[in-house]
Length: 133
Image (cartoon, helix red, strand yellow):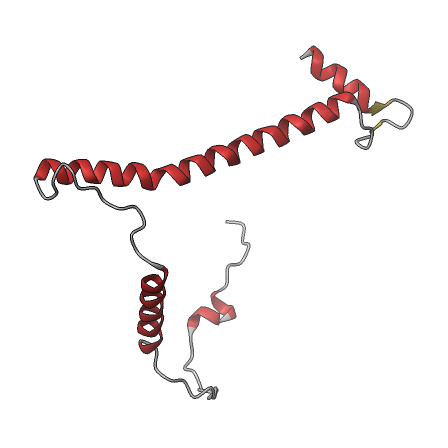
């Protein structure tokens, strides 16, 4: 609590009774670099996690397939065994499949004014009135 009061005293101008947040002190730089450091470390940890999750997944899947007897002990599952041409063919097939699901639109919008029946929801006689009962 004492440190907070000291920091507040650094930024508080007694003449104008206002805090000046534009004053850059050593405490400001410390907080800035610690914040940057935390963000940088968090990003590095996320990169490590995202690059290793597929490897761990394939290792666990390979172990499971060996237990079930679907692959031999000497066989391994190749990580990323799909070539670039195969990936492009799959992407093109998915794109064409997605576009075939949509029918051709004419691009013309027509707005027809329809006469509506009376609706009590918009009637002013049913609105709430402030009555003292």
